[in-house]
Amino acid sequence: MCCDAAIISNSPPWLLASYPEGNLFQLTQEEIQILLMREGREKLFLQGITLAGTKCLLIRDNLYTEGNNTMDLRTKGQSRGSQAVTVVQIESVYLVVMGQKGTEGGPLNLKAFEMAGYIKEAIHQHMAHF
Image 1 (tube, rainbow, N blue to C red):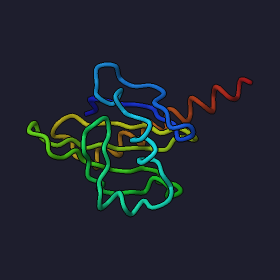
Image 2 (image 1 turned 180 degrees about the horizontal axis):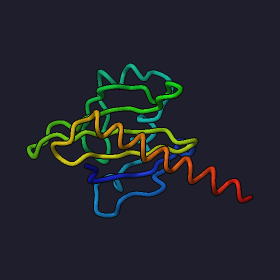
Image 3 (image 1 turned 60 degrees about the vertical axis):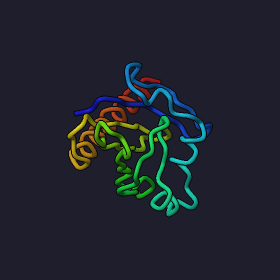
Image 4 (image 1 turned 90 degrees about the horizontal axis):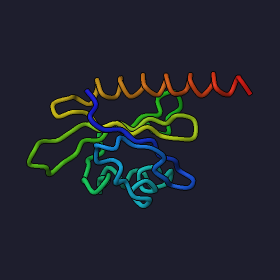
C-alpha cells in the first residue's frame, strides 16, 4: 500500500528520517515550511503543494483539526499516474506517507493514521521509562 515515507518536523523545518529508496528524502526545508504553515492554509488548495519536487493537489486538510490531524494530497502531472499522499501529525513531528500507484487516498489515510498510533504508543512507552 505504501511506497515511500518520511518523518519531518516543523521547528525547525527538517527532514528527520525517510525511506532511502523513495523520493521523499528530497523534501526541502521550504517545502516542509509551506506544507506545515498554520496561517494562510486556504492558499494551499489554490496553489497546490510541492513535495520533493513533485507538484501535489490538496484534497483534504485536517492537519490542525484536533482528533484528526491528517492531510490528504495527490500527486499530479506525472505520466506514470498520480499517487495518494497522507500527512499525519504525531506529537511534534509529522509522518508523510506516499501510496503505491492505484492506492486510493481513503485507505492510505487510515493506514497512515494507524501507523501514527503505533509511533505515538512507542513514544509514550519510551518516555514512561524515564
